[in-house]
Length: 224
Image (cartoon, rainbow, N blue to C red):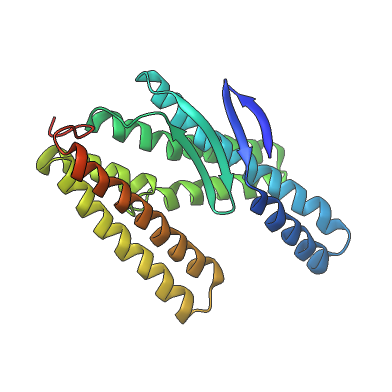
C-alpha cells in the first residue's frame, strides 16, 4: 500500500502489516474491551511513526553522501530503506547504519521529556518503544544496523569481502540464537525474528557471492 512521498521518498506498507495490525486490534479488544481499539490505534500510530522516522534517518544520512533512496517499505518486523547504491567507505556505512538507531534514541529522549511534562502514559510507552527499537537494531547481527556497523569496523582491517563474511557468521549465530530462545521459551516473536534474520542472511549471502564471483576487484569499499 502506497503512503505517499516522505521527504521525496516513496513510502509503502506491505499488505502483511495490515493483516498483523488487524489481528493486534482484535487482541486489544479481547483483552481490554471496546477501549482496546483506541489503545491499539495509539500504540500502532507510535510504532508506525517510529519505524518510518528510523528509516528516514538512514535515507537522510545516505542523501548527505549523494546516495538516493528508491523507496521505504514497512514490514511486520521493521522497515527497509532501499538505497540506490552501497556506501563508498567504512565511515559512510557506519554513519548511514547508525542514523536509524540515532533517530530512535532522539525520540526516546523527546517522548520521555514530554511524558515528564504532560504525564500522558502513552508518551512513556512511545519512549520505551524507541529505546528498545534502538537497542534491538544495534545488535551486531548482520544485516541489521549493528551488523552493518560491525562490518564497516572490520572492513578497515580485513577488507570488505572478508568483513562481510565475518559479519554474516555473527548474524547467523544471532539468528539461530533467536530460534533456540523461541523454541525453549515458546516465544513466537523470538522464533520469527530468528527465522527472518536467517532468511535475510541467505539473500545477502547470495548477493555478496555474486559480487565476489563477478566484481571482486570492485568492492564497494575496502580498507580506509
